Amino acid sequence: MSAGNAGKQRAAEAALAHVVRGSIVGVGTGSTVNFFIDGLGRMRDAIRGAVSSSSASTARLEALGIEVMDLNHTGTLDLYVDGADEATRDRYLVKGGGAALTREKIVAAASKQFVCIVDDSKLVPVLGRFPLPIEVIPMARSYVAREIVARGGQPVWREHCVTDNGNQILDVHGFEILDPPSLERDLNQIAGVVTVGLFAQRPADLLIVGSGNGVTVI
Ligand code: 5RP
Image 1 (cartoon, helix red, strand yellow):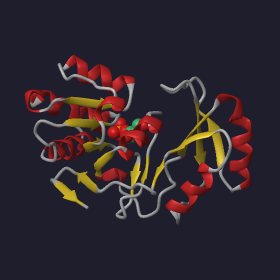
Image 2: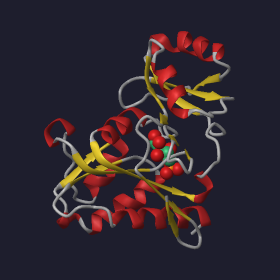
Image 3: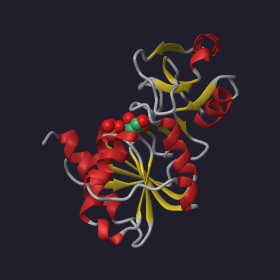
């Protein structure tokens, strides 16, 4: 196993300790979360089910015999576990590399505790090296792109990518994100933006960073 995958797996295994017995678990999307889902599969008799943030995670959960529930029927969740494309020590995140950012933000918002799991390559001093994903309503794509250029970013349309919500993604290069909550607030105001992949107004509550040597909890 590569060092990156070992870190992802270690972080995911550490997150399993936060799962409340008899609860419904919020589950994110991506290769790190896939290790968490595999662990949940081993303890599926100890949980009631899961709320999933993507069709990909839903398929993996169901294949392991875990019931996937509708967030409209579950109420507030105790725990949401998800990965990230970049994370800071303030627990601000860039997410959306897997195009699941909108449902991820919804499930994070509806959960008491958000535990983010990453390998140590994702930890950065300043967000922005990873292009910031923004989900947009298709007819607004060019308008939103112009608004982003006006703010100093370089948007690139993620062609052939349609989100689970039928929308499109712009990946924004060139932002040095020194004030994540304020940029998130500003970009959220642009008409046609569905979700900004910055998780700063609701950051992770706990960041578990896995490496070749072990885990660090921030
Ligand atoms: C999906 C995400 C993922 O959490 C993010 O892309 C990290 O993925 P991985 O664990 O595969 O590196 O935000 O929309």
